[in-house]
Length: 416
Image 1 (cartoon, rainbow, N blue to C red):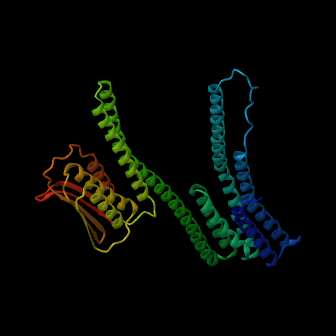
Image 2: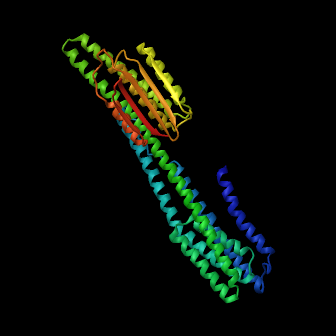
Image 3: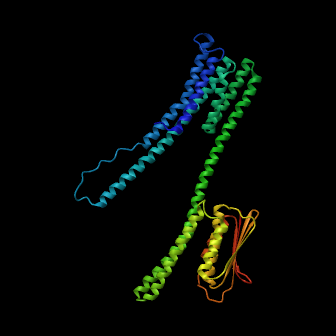
């Protein structure tokens, strides 16, 4: 069953040829077998043949190559079952078969690309002949469908061929029109036609370049999204897993020394780190999704969690006109607030916290503050804040963290 997505282009290309023949039959002089009509018939037939060479044989070759690439190759001959053939050898054979199939697909893809490149000169020659024949037919008939074919071929050349092949076709068209105008005294008409030729060529080429630019932007967006997801996974797992390994290695050494209680404490810490990393991973995945909650709602959830786990107040103040920000910006603000509140629980136990979010025109400002605590905190490095600072710099923002007269403050500013 034919692919519906290929029916419309096929019908359009065939329709161009049918309309050209129908218009040429109705033109004067019409098709015939004597005199000028014979010349018109010969030129029309030659134009139809060149257009067929441009449109359909190339598509047929491409589809044949795709079918060859999709068609399953002959499966390697399987040896007769042996009772002593173990599973390792069977697995090795299956991996070799999979690798060979992938190699065949890669070779077929390279062959398809090479074939497509080799067809470009053929298309260029066919379009050049179509242009020359259309101008010759225009000289015989004086206008009519030949000019439409001329413009169509130039547009096709500009849209489907590289400049090194399409520009000579445009130069051929302009030169032939100038010669025709000088010979038949139609220079004024041909000058306006040359202007139309240049306009069609430039419009078709600009459309081609715009499509290529959009495709490049789409590829860049995909790569940027992959890099962003990879950075999120790295920020979560690299710190969590490395700390877990340290605790588990310490627990192993303590168990060898018969220090069960201390080893159990290390295992509990590793479990807490794993639980925290899993929660952070879930938050990151939720923030990466388009249906993630808005930033104010997510900050309120963090504030409620802080109050539930510490029995200390965490006030949230939001000012400005609330609106959705880009996903990476909201994620950076949320992760910064999360890291800052985590540091408050670790390094300032028993201390309340305050979160202030300000929506400004063209930017967003986040501040997390807490007073100094009389209780000793858990010692630790500032890896989390370093990662948040790098994330802010990638967004064009700034992050600062340090002591103030009232305690400690984490300040993040990002453009939005």
